[in-house]
Image (cartoon, rainbow, N blue to C red):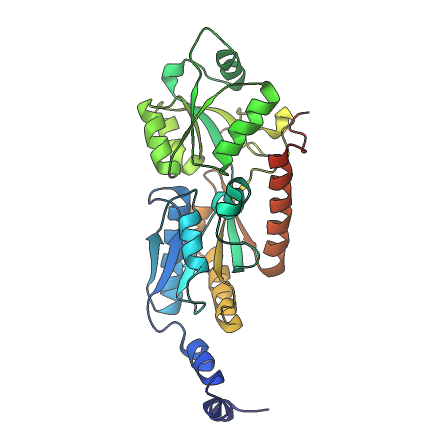
Length: 326
């Protein structure tokens, strides 16, 4: 077997191989950018910053969050897709930006989640909750249906985080199933949507529990429905969309970690090891586990298979060929 010195000597003879070998051998030798395609203060930003702290400590170089927002997260994702595959520009997206936007926005999306990225891993899952402002005067989902069907009152304004988002698709799912007419009000991310919901500028919205839970505990928001398959320990009396017979597509929200396609495998493996180490950290799990979230670790082919399934399910829903009612 060749020792390290012989490998380096061989690399020096090849002008094409030498830069690649040197690049992976010393990575990271400078700060690494983690692009979060959503505004600061939202759940994806929170997870991205927790991951950045863990990786900075592990690799001895700063991992810095860069919030590049717009177009349901696609602005930041397209930026990473076009970046050099050298391990210095990475992506921390969620389901909405990576899958939902591709289906909803169609040809305007300038990236392919399967072709343009190498999955490092998915590390957290969560469920959105349907929330109402207290001034609406309702405290459960049945009351929401009654109010939405009352033709004598104005249509309800429902905050969403853009085309392809769980919040937007949940509105569509509920509207189809219950024949509701709702006014969708798009926002650039979860945090600004919740700000306007608490202020009463929109009457209904959806957000994960870590983002909206404090307002619930203060009495400024009321939970009506969990958008997903499982009730939350924090809201044991709040039913799920699955209990209503709304099971496809699966609106479980995940957050993941991706590199541009063609990133050297040695760097990808180091990042996967770094992510695995992070998921074992108590400080990291305090952010990603509990409070409505579930810490997970899926990597490699398992992530690719999940992306393929979710793309197919969302596309079928968009074409109207998936049953949305029980």
